[in-house]
Length: 367
Ligand SMILES: Nc1ncnc2c1ncn2[C@@H]1O[C@H](COP(=O)(O)OP(=O)(O)OP(=O)(O)O)[C@@H](O)[C@H]1O
Ligand SMILES: [Mg+2]
Image (tube, rainbow, N blue to C red; front, side):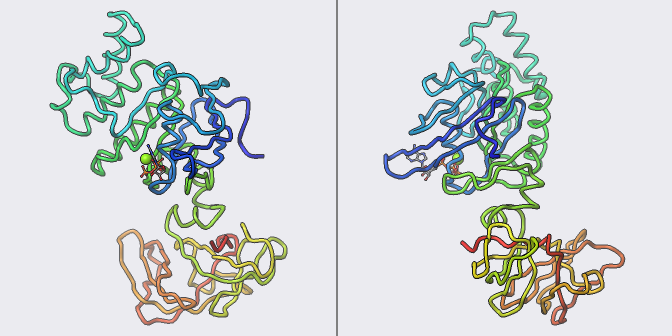
């Protein structure tokens, strides 16, 4: 069963569509529900509809069709400031004329919290993001990363049950990004906050999330925990969007006992697990991760189909070896092997035989 319309949902999109111009749907029939406390990431290429979904949930955009529910209640007609949602958007800046403490106090004043209570909450929120000493400064007197932490503290200070974040770390350098990724997930889990996070950085999505919704063209292509997304992509888009992946085009010859026999376009035949192909004659892209390709014949089953390959390039990367092969008419087939004492370094020009376990190779749609 699809994970939709379930009663435990804290946030639910039900058959939501969105069009800005009355013609093109930029969000198409979105069904998505999150239980309380989940950290869910919307991941996808530019223009796939991620921000639009977040804006509808926040209340800054209205859905053209369908319903959005919070804790079982439709919020379609509730204005943004009454939804009680914390937000960290890239362009949702701190107020420049206010001090850091005043910035944090503001959402509490709006909610009519008394002065002494406000001061205690502001202090705690700043300490939470290790900015306790900076309450008296103005935003311009902080670094980009410090401002981002204050923005996070401001989103959390009124103890919202739901926090939305749209590319909150986009402007930060790699090191600070990684630190903040850890801090955000840590805080969210510790405080039991439900989070919808938007990014187009797949590493960020995989490392931070309980589940990831992969968006393309206004639709969720797959919704799954990170390991499942990487290991069991349900279509070619997801296989190619998440992680590195080799693809070879071919035609299904036969599907039998959960195994697809695929004739590649160069005439070679290989085994794959059928995923979204149905019958003999279907065009397919077979998909295999670089770390799952085997070139040691002894480690393959005796009846496994293999392909002849020529080593085109060998790159030493420290912890791993990355080797580019010419296979089945392509010259961009990558294999990755761990740098282990018994691991052979392949030489350009060398001819080898490659293969894999059928369960590691997936026959996906050819579109
Ligand atoms: N206010 C708007 N008016 C008209 N069209 C819009 C508006 N906002 C977004 N769009 C269009 O809707 C589609 C989805 O945009 P959206 O901002 O949701 O994408 P996104 O997935 O967040 O992309 P990015 O990763 O670039 O931020 C795009 O084609 C975009 O041009
Ligand atoms: Mg966006």
